[in-house]
View (cartoon, rainbow, N blue to C red):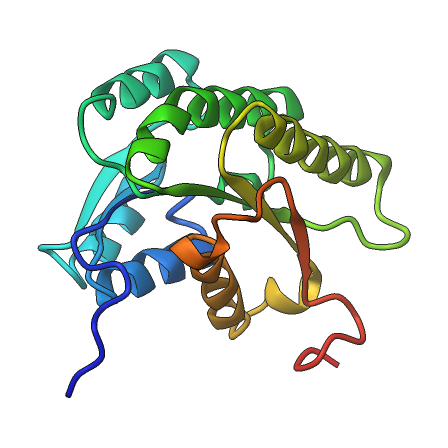
Length: 207
């Protein structure tokens, strides 16, 4: 007997879907029966991604730093079931910290009641700060970790994955997908505000 698809009939938003990690998550969610709205600025990448699961991945080109567009996105989902929001856009280089914090906070706060009705969750994914990282990278990682905790304290179901370089190279996406989807399943509902380091030196499978 075939195993049931873990995300069958579940609606998912993936921001940063053009990043390799975002692409891998979209494909994994679609393969597990989910309907995925893939958001990013690179329309050509999104179209190619959607062509692999035309009935399950809907591409949406969107400026992830445009607050007005993000507000409209959140408003569009107020009356529809939403089971998962993946915020992978902090993996993109060049996005300003203030824009990242604003976009994550806006979407999670506005979509928290929608996710709660569907027993859904949000997962934030960002680069970890390695020893010797620049002050800017350390500040970004620290601010996103603090925001994850603050949003959880505000009632949102949100956890984060802090990715070390080992999983930001080709082939590491599978581990990220596994952990991100695990944190979105009902069995993880008791956990919120946690930041999980992934691919840290010395971790099993990434030595």
